Image (tube, rainbow, N blue to C red; front, side, top):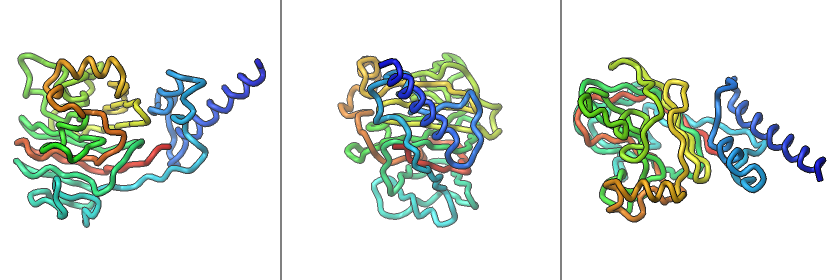
Length: 253
């Protein structure tokens, strides 16, 4: 029995190392993934959340064609967004965007910066059942922190799960500088990273999640955060400038 557990532990460790090495990029010891979180939470029962030996391929999401995006609930790309190479930007209020593909488990990376008093976000596991993407899906917040300079409500800070869970620390760079974001979703486990630091970790569909949502404005939307797969969405319906570059995704088991 001891030998079996030792073999199981070795297999889990090997699989985790395999995930961190996939994509051809070196990962540091401080790096992680939602699969790692799942394994730590349920080391013997969360096998479905563990990575496999299958190679994972990064897919760029922004290019000159913007063929992977469309305006919210539309068939064509929204006007007002400016594309240059792998960069996407807007100045002022434009239509929200959503991907043409739905994703369940994934790792999403991108750089971002905002202008004065700007407020935006990236949503994941979005459904189209409501009028706005943020009524169904959690949001990785992107904003000028001066928007809330007085109350300093961290539930609204950059990298928060907007309005629900605050980041554990402030890691945003000065206004106008590029920040690096990373979102990892595997099963019900979610991580938000900002500039190389994991600042938020939570579990969807958990009692703690349900209780927290109950005390927010999202309680008015019964299916908020419950979808197991959905679209990605970039918020455009707030004022201010937003720039995103190098957005890419890789799907996880």
